[in-house]
Amino acid sequence: MAQDELPRPGILRKIIHIDMDAFYAAVEQRDFPELRGKPVVVGGGAPDSRGVVATCSYEARVFGIRSAMPASQAYRLCPHAVFLRPRFEAYRAIFQEFTASVEAISLDEAFLDVTASPIFPCIVNSTHPTIK
Image 1 (spheres, rainbow, N blue to C red):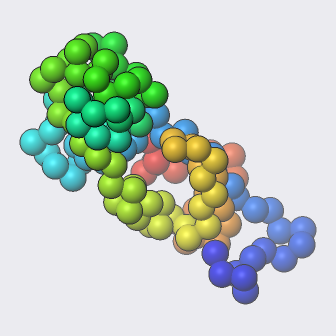
Image 2 (cartoon, one colour):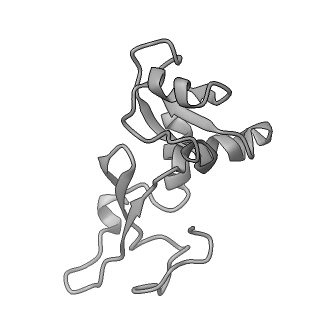
């Protein structure tokens, strides 16, 4: 949100808290349909590296893979999983559809100020149908 778009004092601001859980993996499955239905692990490197799982798809969680797990352990649990490096720009671009005012608080959580967003003209305490 540009400085001149900041709400005047007394104007209710609309802040959304996003907890993305399997968000990175879901974006990969959206952008690459051949990954849908497959266990996807997004993180810092190949399974034989010292990388760590940033997140994984729900299909990978069935095998016991979790965030912050060493990639080598994730590979032992599910050797047929697809291991990908994060594409942070692709993930950030999704937030830009809603607002330029994004405050990340961790790898998978952020606050979005949607006060000036035309997508959220009168939403205060409800959920927009396009947000899952």
